[in-house]
Amino acid sequence: MAFLCIEFIAVFTIFGLELHKDGDVDQNWGTIRLCGYCKAAITLVKYMPQVYLNWKRQSTVGWSLHNVILDFTGGFFSFGQMIARGKFGDSDSGFNIVKFLLAVIAMIFDLIFLFQHYVLYRSAWEQELKISVRQNALERV
Image (cartoon, rainbow, N blue to C red; front, side, top):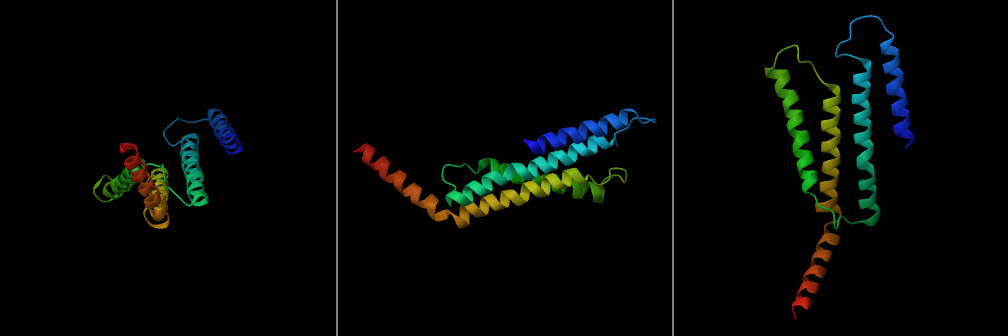
């Protein structure tokens, strides 16, 4: 909560300073950039509790990986789009550091989740599957 409050204070402070600054308003506002960096920081922080919970339980049982796979795909295509725009796009498009950070952070954490699920804690998942199959067999009898 303190992290979010600090980010709000920083954004509103920068915004207030920019309102009092003379000159034209364009899309290169420091406030917009700061909001993008805040989004990247929040994205970095939001994945950490799930990584810790999976590690503490030594299991990913009961946790669906469909969204992780979709998130990785989105980060991969976002990264690919930046590369394609840099190579084939106009020279004015520039490099978007926030988009790059979001894509890289998402893909790194998604790879961690996939590694936890399919490599580190695979035995817990398989054991839960066997228990589920036994319970279904007992219910049929």
